[in-house]
Structure formats: structure tokens, C-alpha cells
Length: 249
Image 1 (cartoon, rainbow, N blue to C red):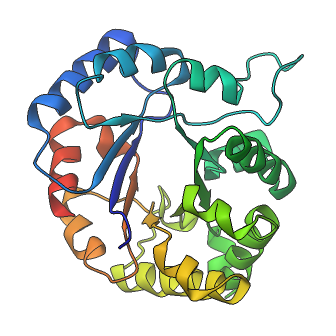
Image 2 (image 1 turned 180 degrees about the horizontal axis):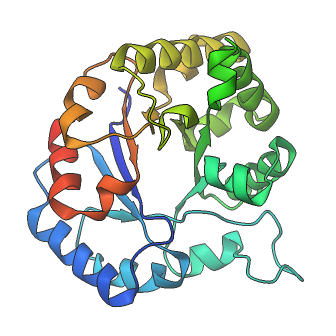
């Protein structure tokens, strides 16, 4: 049975004091759930977050990691560095990393390989831009992103991969993605994986939705058969909103 997951990507928000305050609120209000709950604070606060949640079921994950083991990569963080502070999952390929930092499919393939080689679970993000959706190229773009970064992996690697579909056109654009559109794409993703590997792998991989999930729409989105949870942005920065989204799954 596929894992249900709700992950909060805090992006470049919350200093150390604010991080610890939010973690305390989440821990106090965390509902009883069978879903995996994750939070991704900024990298400078990962160690403090891990220590703060050592008696909690909430997992602390990284927003990013570099593909190199070490070297002259100023400002970057390696897999070994993440492991050394207790991080076992990393977000790779987020739309903002692609858009603002020029991360190509080729770079992301290297990051995925480095993470898996070091036994770090990958939460791989992908999705189409507004112009792709309007042009009707959304399925082709998503298939290409999956193929270029993931389809050279051995079948065994998929037990350590979580997918997060981000319709970039529905995040902060004024456009709205319906739950049916989310289900349509998630079903396509699962079909694409089944064709590249087999139906068993496609059926076991968790596919999260990352298109502006909020307390008001979470239950309907999560009710779709191929949506296994959410990668939550802004709503994860407010304890009550994030808790309501967790309850919805």
C-alpha cells in the first residue's frame, strides 16, 4: 500500500527562533495520523530542527543538496553533510530551483543519483509552466522531466523515491488547478512509470501534489485515487493550516 505523505517546504522563511516556535506548535497540535509528516526548514536550521523533533514522528528533510561529495562548491551542501545531522530525505528538482538557479534535467539526474547512492530518499519535483499547459504540452513536458532525471535508474531505486507534481502555472499566477486536473496528471504519471518499468513500481510510488494546497481544498484533492498527499508551501508556515491539511489526508 502506498504511503500517504504531507510535507511542508518552508523555503527561505523562518529564522532559528521562529523555526523552533513553529516546530513546537506543530508537535503540540499534530493529529493522530498514519501519514508521514515532514518539514523542510532552511538548511542552516536543520540540525536544530532534528534535535527539537527527536521524540516526534515528524521527519525533518532538506530542501536541496549538491551532487558532489565535497569540493569547491561555495554555499552548497553534500549528502554526507545532510546525513551527519540526521537528514534522510531531500527535495530535488523543485520548480524554484529549476527557475531561479538554472537546474537542468541533467543536473537533477546527478543529484538524484548522488542522493540514492548515499541512501538519502529523494522527493523529486517536476511540472509544467503556464505556457506549456496553455499550449497543450503539459503531458510531454512531465514525461520528459521524469525520463531525463529518473528513467535510467534501476528498478530497485524506486523504493527510495517520492514524486511531487508541481503545476507551476497554478502557483501564484491567479490560475487554478482543479482536483480533477491533479488526478488526471497523477494518473498519467503513474501510467508513464508503468510503461517505463512495470505496474508494481507505478502502484507503489507515492505521488504528491504541490499546487497551492490549502485547508479549504486539501480534502477534495487528497480524495483523488492517484494523489497520495501534498508538498505544501505557504500553508505549511502556519501551524493551524498545516495541521488542518494533515487532518484532511
